Amino acid sequence: MSSKTDILSRIRRNQPTPLPLPDLDAAWTEYADRETQFLEVLTMVGGAGLVVADQHELTERVAAIPVVRAAQKVVCPIAALQASIPAGSLVELEAIDNPHQLSDIDVAILPGEFAVAENAAVWVSDAAVRHRAIYFIAQHLVLVVPRQQMIDHLHQAYDRLSFAGAGYGLFISGPSKTADIEQSLVIGAHGPRSLTVLLVGNK
Image 1 (cartoon, one colour):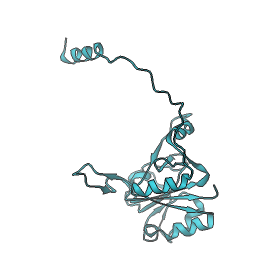
Image 2: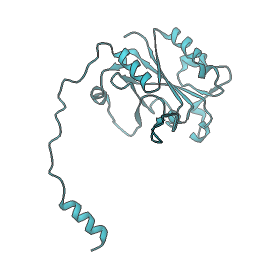
Image 3: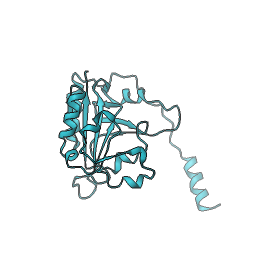
Image 4: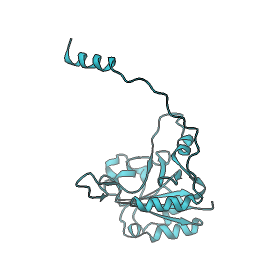
C-alpha cells in the first residue's frame, strides 16, 4: 500500500460524526433604514455611495465623479449614462475580443442587480457585460443599482439567486483591499482602487 493510499484510508476511517445542518428558518436581522445601513457599511469597507432620485440626477452625479472626469478610457454599457463620459474616452466593451485589451481601463460603470444592506454587497453578473474581467481589471468601479432592489441580508440574497444554466456572478463590497502584510490596509491590491455605488430611483 502506498503512503497516499494509507493516508486516505486513515482519513476515511476517522471521519467526524455527522451533525444536522442548522435550521435557517430564523428571524434574521431587518433594518428600519436599509439605505443608511448600506451606505454606512460601504463607507466602512472603503467604498462610497450616493442616493440619486432620477435619471437626470444620475447623469449629473456620474459626470461629477472625479475619477470619471479624469478618465481617458471608460467602459459603460449603460447607454443612458454614456453622455456623462468625457468625450473620446468611451471604450465599447462589445468590440473587445481579448480581455487583456482592458488592462488600461480607468473606470468601468456597470449595472448591479441588487444590494444587501447587511454588508454593503452588490450582486453583479456577466449577463450585461461581455468580459467579466472588467469588474476586476478597471482602476475604478462604479455600480448603478435600482433603489427598489435593496434587501436586508444575505439569506434573502441567496433566495433571489437562480442558475438555470452556466453563468457567472459575485457579490462586490467595497474596493479591492488586503491587510495581510503587517496588518496594514492596502486599497486596490488585487483589483479596483475605488468603488462607488449609486442607488437610483424611488424606493
